[in-house]
Image (tube, rainbow, N blue to C red; front, side):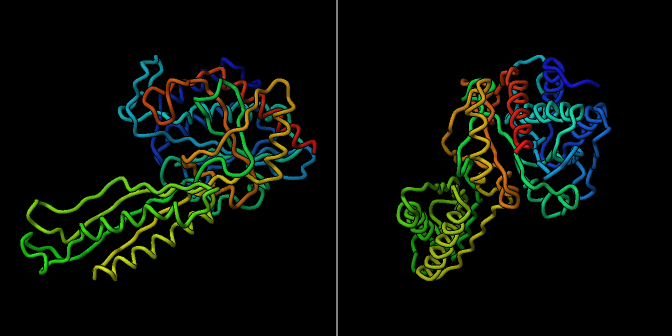
Length: 384
């Protein structure tokens, strides 16, 4: 197979869009990706399907005079969203859709892999087709199960995320944090139920929960540097069964968003302190569960990101914008905590929709524009 053309990449993207699969269930997507990859020139390629993460794919390209191994990651899973685009290549599966644009991500990665399979790069290159970004922390699983070992260990890692707010093909990036880290918060308060008329004989978890919720609202405003940014949202509270019975149990569920891992750990500790205080004050059990998984902040490496931005800014064929950080999560942050690298935006020109929307319809011209911009950067990187 020759280097994939724009029309070829669009056809691949449309097929991928038709077969979305949820985290760790990406069997059909995995098999189709392997089918496409096996059609490439294999002279420089080593393809590996790790037993430890069987829907993942690693493709190593042997460089002509390697000084490093450059990693490129794309995610491959979809979301539990019922598609409402009415496209002729809409999802074939009810309630599942590529509503985050991972079909675009995969198509760009295949375009890059196709080019470098025919044009041997100077450095080694590692393409990582990653399952389970939307949930299940696929990047963390890959790292902890040891799939980045030996020749499959990158020296630096790059990856993109599509952005419907930016025009098709625009590259966006920033030094520092691109995406926030996220942590799930579950709090269970266990007291003693009783009759509404005899509160002295009960231990009211609703009152304690109300106090705790108000105290948690001060964490960002009084414990975090105001120049930085963080969010705590408590989106669900469940307690009681009927109006005239004091609730002996209350559950609070929420999420933390922070721009650095240090900030998230600081917020975690303040939540522990507050929960311990409420437990003592109200003489009840307060159980706090914090689940971050692999959704660490996407903190771009300073040197590599500056190099990436300089290339994109100085390339007259690339439309580049410096973007602000987003409070959305991305598990590439975990890998960037283990390997230096950069994540960036690729504009897909759909301003009337947003990520995770049932109507997301990316402009397919973004695919080849993205391939060309990233290809140029990688060639330039290998020359430095």
